[in-house]
Length: 119
Image 1 (tube, helix red, strand yellow):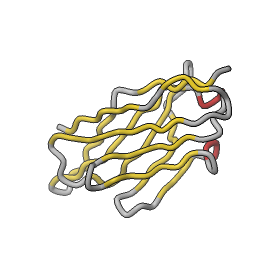
Image 2 (image 1 turned 135 degrees about the horizontal axis):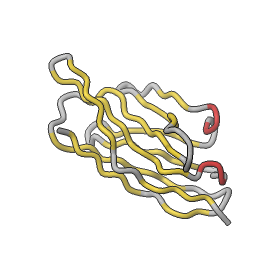
Image 3 (image 1 turned 30 degrees about the vertical axis):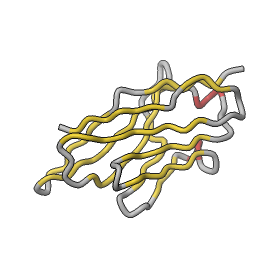
Image 4 (image 1 turned 120 degrees about the horizontal axis):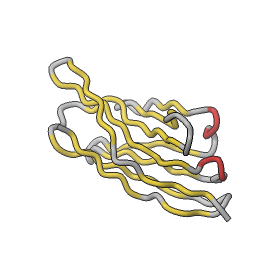
């Protein structure tokens, strides 16, 4: 099993910034893709950003140019720097990692951290 611990959520005014962190621990063999997803009230969970072990990134169109995903492979940690936040960014943000063991990929989710953008 892999455990994920998220931190960094909170309340911020529009235009502000937050940095989310997610640290993985436990039975880690090879973490390939790490990512962030979010779920707003009444909506489905959606992709925010992903990053491969080699550093290739992918972003939702709604956050391109405002959010930056990064990772520290030595610490098994992924970060999400969120700038120019908008009220529509309000959601619970979830960390996700893909752990590969013996060619089998398992997906793990964090517990979620609330991000609220409001004046």
